[in-house]
Length: 131
Image (cartoon, rainbow, N blue to C red; front, side, top):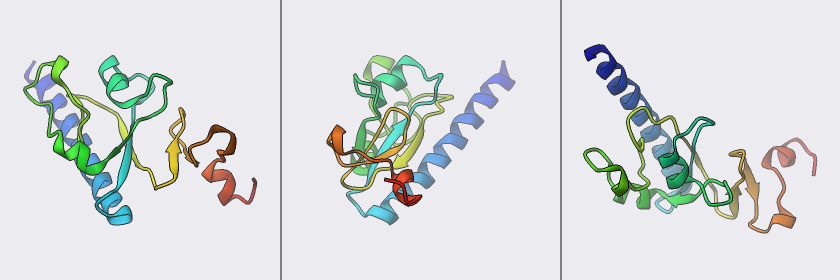
């Protein structure tokens, strides 16, 4: 039981350090108004899907300051959890990406130009010369 608790703590703290680095990078790239999206992994729990995905299954976009102002969910009951900068809960595996202005994130976690579905083009396609 003690080993399981240490594994859970280590896994959660490693994920928290990873998220801190991603937040820092977002703020360096985009400034104080940096926008990010948390991307739940394929086996994400209901709490992560609810906190970080829209009803259509697309990742929600948050400002870094919004996530930081929510603090942490440590010690809170699940019903009171808020979207946060670090892991939502122990063993949380959600990832985070920077979302530049005038872009959104599709269901697969890829950045797309614009906000109008008809005009969206993959950033990868633009970089490869396709379009």
